[in-house]
Length: 362
Ligand code: GDD
Ligand code: MG
Image 1 (cartoon, rainbow, N blue to C red):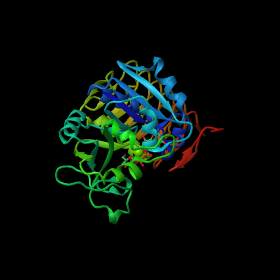
Image 2 (cartoon, rainbow, N blue to C red):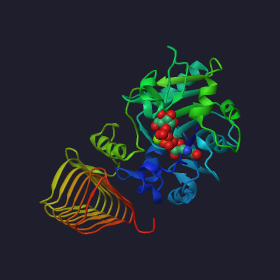
Image 3 (tube, helix red, strand yellow):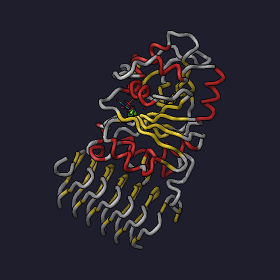
Image 4 (tube, rainbow, N blue to C red):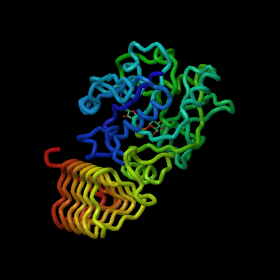
């Protein structure tokens, strides 16, 4: 089976992290999000994926050397200007004449894709949409259905009091090639606002598969942090990374990490390969990236520190993200959903709350 993964968004809500690294390549518990998604697709027999993109395309091509990910073949469909979700699919599907799975490139899920494809075949649908249930559907595509799953409406991001159901578009579709023909070429088209709402008018064409397992859109700072806690806790039903070992319950350590015996580790924690944790440091519900350095008496609480970053002595990072190679100097604090971009510096003694700190020139 082939897949198209939509990775063309600019990830504006995660700036400045996404100024240098596109959202799908940001690490989630030390593994680039897209690698997690491609492994998930591969486990259901997907052998070829087209990455549908426009923003920072070279970052993807440089990441996947040889255009392969394991046994999966990768192709790149680079848009000159953003074509939207449906326009992007149409462009990426050039030359494909068979069924495809389409995924938003920012959704972490335990969906049973095999069961969804079986549902799609059983209904003889042209398109099937995976639905999950959320408390506040107003941030999503809201999808009311008949009892047999046939879609009767698709309302993208309605006002909260006007959502007819809590079941929302979870960002994975199974599409037959007829659907591509419904999308005009080379113009910006939204699958959520145009293609799906129109398909509702054709009886028997569009179905939805409800699945109540783990699901999270990682596209906001708060959800990006939450994804780490969830993966560390085992909510996806697997260890956080294949190479980490569980030193004690909920404390995961990768090869070559150096942890001072006086450091305080409170589960869940993941310490990346080659990272250093100094004397008296506190690491609580946090992820430390490969080769990162957490200095003596530094405190991390619900923090995510990317590779090669440094958090200086007596500094605190709480509910916040530190980008790759960033320098948090000593005696600083970054709290309350602060994002520090790759290679940025937070100067000694500075207090940042709910801030966005980018490297100079970004
Ligand atoms: N190729 C391409 N071109 N991809 C794009 C473009 C584009 O012009 N615009 C957005 N994308 C990609 C993004 O990279 C992302 O993977 C996906 O399309 C969805 O875009 P988001 O910006 O993340 O949309 P959203 O999260 O607000 O809403 C979407 O996802 C929700 C579930 O998380 C919609 O599909 C909603 O209906 C859905 O409920
Ligand atoms: Mg999204």
